[in-house]
Amino acid sequence: MLTLQCPCCGLNADETELHPGGEAHLTRHGPGSTDDDFEQYLFLRENPRGVHFERWRHANGCGKWFHAARCTQTLEVFGTYTAQTAEPPQPIRDAISAKRPGWSWRGLS
Ligand SMILES: [Zn+2]
Image (cartoon, rainbow, N blue to C red; front, side, top):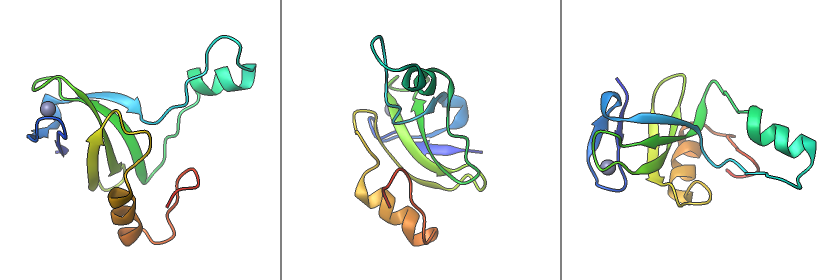
């Protein structure tokens, strides 16, 4: 069972207390953007077998959204952080790189 620590209230919540919100760190494009950018924003999502950054809501807890870095293959959780964070924090990226040498994501490692 997936267990994530909510960075907002500090509780360890199992997946029955959480609501998934899809991919984290999307770049939002609206009116005036190119068709390709708008298509990317609306329809195209990463679906890796491995490290993924996701949005979760502590639905049966504090109710706040947060981000989680985890492996979709092993369910290993590398860390959680608030939804207001623009990119994965360096300590989490370091934890991923320590266990997945050579890992990178959107130019970050
Ligand atoms: Zn919470």
